[in-house]
Image (cartoon, rainbow, N blue to C red; front, top):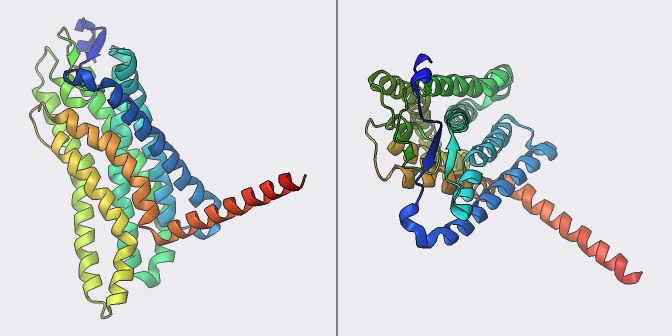
Length: 318
């Protein structure tokens, strides 16, 4: 961290989407609605799983953990982005910028590892159903903790090496939040070592979980194809279809942004997808593509509707 003594930049300025100046209000309303929907949707999923005993299983615990991660992830990025859009406050201090970088990278890496853990859970349930519960009971704690350890370590390495670079100007970040590549491109010092470390960390934190997921799904597909009945095949694959969609959306956009060496003018548009749009879709995917969650959700709606009708009936009598 010695190079921090030679850094003269005390704050950074986001350019965000300044070229879309005429759409700033529209973008603010859109992003605000997405943020509110994303947070409320993930809170709903978390409460459904925590409060309904029938969903107290490993798979749903991981889904509830993923929902909390999504809330944290969007809350790290979107509030500042909204402030930029509506108030034009596009400055962020040096310390706040790297704090945002660390938190965003940490939650992102944890999500990548958690998606791999969720794939292992589905793989074990489909390929070895008779031993699923005893094996999952033994490994559950390790599987729940591992994504957090891996994510925090990867994010620490990325943040330390990026913060160790010398920043003497310019300080304009071509993005709407503090991200790795835009920050490293502003450094005055040699970034070769930092870029190498970043590439290795991204391979470990993003590419490796993706390879694990692909490997597990290849084996899952092979096992499902061995099932003789069409109904059996559909039932087996439907248990992991939601996870497959979420993984595809998440890794598809993160690959474009992180698994490449050069900066791109389009990175912030892809980042908009994986930081804002994808978290919005995940609650709906897990709710309406998962039979158990959907059943509990509509049961709660019916109970709430009955409770409201009873209250209205009592107040009318009074």
